[in-house]
Every structure is written in C-alpha cells, then in structure tokens.
Length: 181
Image (cartoon, rainbow, N blue to C red; front, side, top):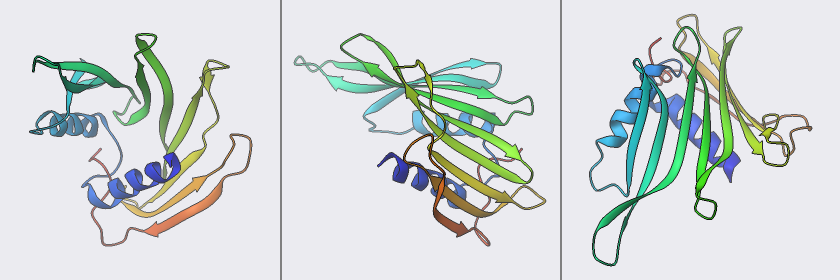
C-alpha cells in the first residue's frame, strides 16, 4: 500500500503542480495551503530557520466529552535542504501514544543527478536504529529547462533486492514539476 501511495503522490505532483524540483518554496507553499483549509480535522505548526521550514507538526483535532476541542500529536516532518535551496530530505515521525513520544517511520531523499531528479523512500529500522536502503524510487527525466518530461517508478520488496520498474509515464504537454528553482 505504501508503494502505491508513494507512486500516486509523486506522479500527481509531477503532473499537476506548476514547478520543477522540490524546494524550500514548495514546502512553504504546501504549509500555507494546509493551514488555510477550513473544516479540517487537522491543525499544523511549523518551525523555521530563516525562510526554510525545518519541522512541521500535524495535530489531529479531537472533541472531549465536554465539547472542548483538543489537539493530539499525529505526524511530524523534518526537512533538510541543499545549499541551492532544493529539498534534500524529509523524515517522517508518528506519535506513539503508549510511549508518549515521536517514533521515526521513514525518510524521503531528493537528488538532482545527471539530468534526472530522484526521489527515494526508505523505512526506518527500529532494530538497527537507522534507515534501511530505499525500497521505492521515482526518477524524473528533466529537460534542459529543468521541466519534467518522463517519470519512472521503481520498487523492491527488500532493501537488498534489485529495483523493478513498476510504472512509467510521459509528462509531455502537462504542467511542470514542483517549484521554480
């Protein structure tokens, strides 16, 4: 299911957002969009360093038996950026109510390499207290203007097995990917 969700999110972003690569500006725009939603079941809070969002916490809204709305921690995202402002990674945490603490779950890494934009998904291994090798990978082929013209999605069942092509799509004629550099 995570494989499908990752592929859908990345392909939809590739085909529906007006931009090129994920940047600090992209993260800021997403945050501004979600905090301005009305009638949402969630509330959001971000920490910034300069103009860069470095952490975003998502709270689930809950009503008490007295009708008072409370906020319960739900997800936390930590962002790191490359020197040029492109997004380098996003680490995801889930709130563990039993232990009353954040539990690391996964990481997305983003890289520009030889005319390709790579997005990789790795799970957190609690036994080794580190991230496993990526199990999902999206490869965006870029045009000279950094717009996307082709998207390939790869998956492997185990971090030690070979990646296998799951899907691919041409993006010609559709809006560009993510955010202007």
